Image 1 (cartoon, chains in turn brown, yellow):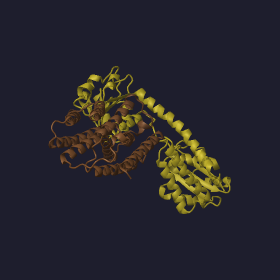
Image 2: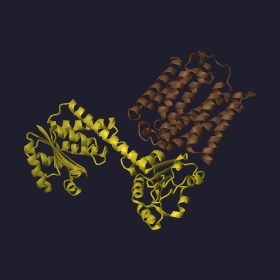
Image 3: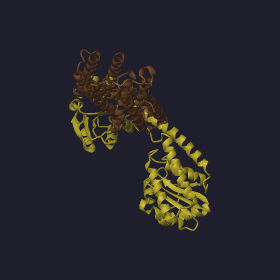
Image 4: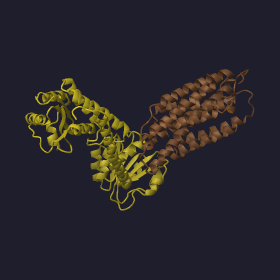
Length: 255
Length: 334
């Protein structure tokens, strides 16, 4: 099975998880299948990325398709670690569609180079920079997802729309704020190591990508510091986590 | 063989009578056996909870079984089957059992404990060997109907009193309440019941303040909390998570500036404010502050009324499911 088929299979699992989760919610209960289906998604993604890595002889982060596939893999990885641990019900409901979208884009033929060339040599710092930076965005993406869930719940509570399956099944405000903060912190720590690795890459010279990454790091560092040290109104924290994520993705997308 | 049910519950009999016919779980099997010892009764199951005692029988003649059961009640409990008892025959008895198992006949609508209690009664009779073709099929069917009703309807959802709505909101905001600190402003009855609901769900620390300090002390003692003088309540704003306000003040007691003053020190932690006073104690503008979730008595009552309305709709849906499920199979004894 080729890596594209494996990625398509992963997308199918995630799509099935998304449809099943939403259908269950409309039926008034939570799906038990989201976690196992996203577990299968994770395995298929890992196999696809493994094949790409073998082809390239390096971390599969050399074209936009690979970066998106790697990002959606790290998103699922953090979902599998955080969702059950913090009992964040419905996190999968919001994560699965995002995984589907990322992977559908990754599957566009022009975005993923067919039969990529095997690299002649690799640099450990460069590899670490690329892998850790994208991995950190798995956590930061999930923080944004958690932020969106908070914004929805906050709206329902403030507008006193306290009925319906979505309201009943969303986690508590406290859980959502807490998980957003933790995911931002985890993302920031990994991004920090990734950026340090970037600066340690030999013969890099002036690199726009690294400058943008540093600006993104500063923005996230300010947000995390404010959230943990001074405190931030929950709505501002959630909104900032979403906006910062979108701006970063947009910036890296242009680059 | 015909099905027959005789029983009493919280709606038909006072507690003094219910406790007379209450049967411990350990004696349910013996009680069922005692019923079947009567010549005219072929099968028997006894269900007994704090709110109900019911006898399900299968007999060739309902009339003869009813007489035998009445004699048994007279001998065993010294009771006559008067207006406190209800009788259900054939399909009506099966329908009633399904309602009971589904929690539709319970004091707290949709509660789940009854399912296990009925199971215990049936298991005791089954073990005693006093059930047969009629009651075995009936109870097995009732359990499957009960599961279906609970899984496919929202009969357990929604709170129907102001206090319980407030508790539900608190749990939606804070998750569990064991780390939540509560401040009660005004020592009235509504504050007391709402605070009690919060304590019963795990809130661990409570401050009570009132214009009359003695009343605050009395309520604080009752709740296991501490009293604060009315002039000092603002200082406690920094640490509390939930405020229940119910004073007789003709003006707003809590204004936006009170909250604004402590927001930074609170690190913008969410705060639930429940205003059950009329006129209102909390300025509605307080609800515009980002981390404040403010609900007044009208809002809570609307929520409670909506929940009650939804439950009535759910009861209709549940009963339709029971009818449909009973219609699917031909149960003996109906």
